Length: 357
Image (cartoon, rainbow, N blue to C red; front, side):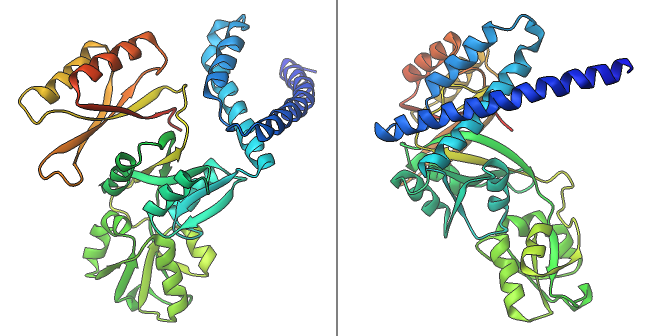
């Protein structure tokens, strides 16, 4: 047996031990779930999770492994939460659209074992989570080509009791889908979600194809499948083509080859751990007020990854702002920054704490 075989044999022995320990840990998680059910407690206990990470990192002898072990612990606890939610029947996750939509694909990536709750609109997703009909909601937030999904940010602003708990980047490949037997030369009309149409604008212009809006890409594919019309095509994913029995007439038609949509997960509880946090705030519409916020962030040593402004609902020509910062939310520097921003801003709210996937 050479050194590689010896190392792999050691890994196999360790994996066998870990399988037994994993079963024991999940059994303990089920007992925790039973207690939470009896006492009407939420699945997520952010303070406990942060303490578990801190306590276990202190046990490591090889400190070079800390970031890897921290990621392992967070993934382990995420699985535990999913299992507890399943045990408690609280594993429903809402999304806008129907099966095969990009939001549904993101949901399956984030919550592979969850019960799915399709909603007609983004607002209905927020309503479902707020009412407790779903534990979480998955929504598109921005696209690397078409930009912000501003309506979702506005809904975040309008629902102060909901928070961003996770962020996931999903590569998006748009395809032109038609009925079996249809050819690209047959197509005279296209339908899809406005974002997908915008992402494929160059391709559509090259063929002079008019496009009409649909609620989402999967609804568009369903429309084509049910139409029996070989002159009508949809813009959607390959997964959606398979789901509705359509064929790909043209692949990768999005103008930007690196087309990625960022999805957020909303929930009723604000996590305490993550490597990024986002804020919503308002300031007086006066010279220097916004600059004071930006200066405070820079002076505190935080990298501001983005800033966005949106019109205030019902207040003409007044704006609220969204910023996303790199940093640990529980760190002393973060607390000092928030304290300073509360002094500078009219209103300030932590929208989310998360680690981007």
